[in-house]
Amino acid sequence: MAKGAKAPKGKKITLNVAKNCIKITFDGRKRLDLSKMGITTFPKCILRLNDVDELDLSRNMIRKIPDSISKFQNLRWLDLHSNYIDKLPESIGQMTSLLFLNVSNNKLTTNGLPVELNQLKNIRTMNLGLNHLDSVPTTLGALKDLHEVGLNDNLLNSIPVSISKLPKLKKLNIKRNPFPKPEESDTFIDSIKRLENLYLVEEKDLCPACLRKCQHTRDKLNKIKSTALTTAPRKAIFSNLVSPNSMAKESQEDWR
Image (cartoon, rainbow, N blue to C red):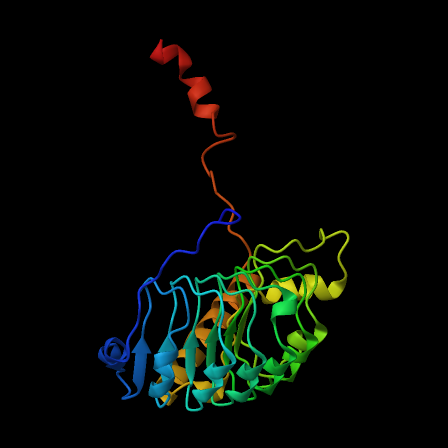
């Protein structure tokens, strides 16, 4: 936006409009869906609906999230992706029920990530991709229940060791960051790149039927692999030929 230009006037969200945007999810939770509404400022009226379980404000033009968002104490799912947010409020650390936080595709810098994020002890998925982060707070390593972390499309040249040691980490997306070239990087960066987009499944996460299927497939692959290693390659046999073209040579005159 050009300097001095007025910010676009967004759609005004009233309490009645917000109430009509509450949906019930397939598992019976209440989701307030205000995505793609052309909102430019956080609608304060929705604070009166703070008993919802999920809040979707994605794909709008919101620039600032107020401290009052912490009033959503029951919130488990918060989606703010694709806005113009450059800073998260410190009060977000008080939303300890959060399991999912998506703030990708915004204007966040490292300074815009409050230390209080480390208070989200129950968080399982955090997407910080498509921002302007040049480093990752080591305090994120305190979030022991994190399963998925999105850090793609930022300005990162390293990843804290504390992130790689998260005990429940299953997916780490660090694509399209200016990491050092392989010959310049240490073994940690090399190993962390191998983790990129890696899904790890533990036996306890699978139902009995799926576990049996995975074990059967694994045994089948191991059998094929062992067979390939022990079986000598077969050679082609030309019992009647001195060389592949010997008969052709002998019959050249006949063909002519």
